[in-house]
Amino acid sequence: MKKNPDAIPVSEWSRLAKGKGELILLVEGDRLLQVLSQRILTKLGYEVLLASSPQLAVVLWKTRAEEVKLILTDYPFGDAQTGLELVHKIHKLAPELPILMVCAAGRPDAKTDPPLPSHTAYLMKPYSLAYLAHTLHRLLTERNAQALPWVPRERASE
Image (cartoon, rainbow, N blue to C red; front, top):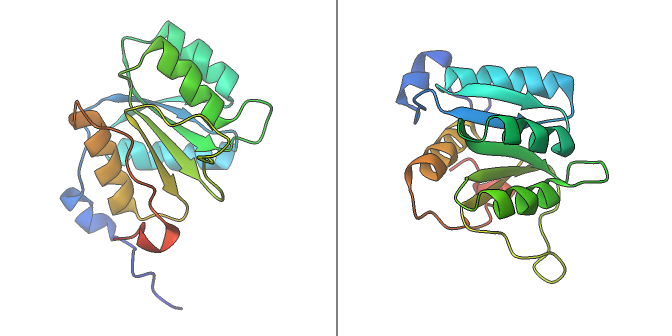
């Protein structure tokens, strides 16, 4: 079996950028990915609030707006409301709230989609655990973080 060069043994997770119990609103429609993502985020030191759709995410965010420190969502989401629409809706309500969009394919189109607001980043799948940890840490700790540059698939593991 071929080893994944980006794999990080559990014994080395202590070297990753860690959270300090911040609450992340995870917007994921696939139950298996919800469970896996929640476990990873918890191991990285974050609390997780789950939403299975962008619509539910807005409702949950409104009920816990003071506690939610970051939103992690898919782009595109796969239903009538995309992750990008969620980003713009939440940004109108909370312009300083960091949002991380995860993309399996495609990304916001600079010609047709509105520009990403500040405090927004996106990662293209697959990405390394280290890069996810670094990006979450950066979004949560850098108060003046602007939209991070697009990270192509081949660079996401650096």
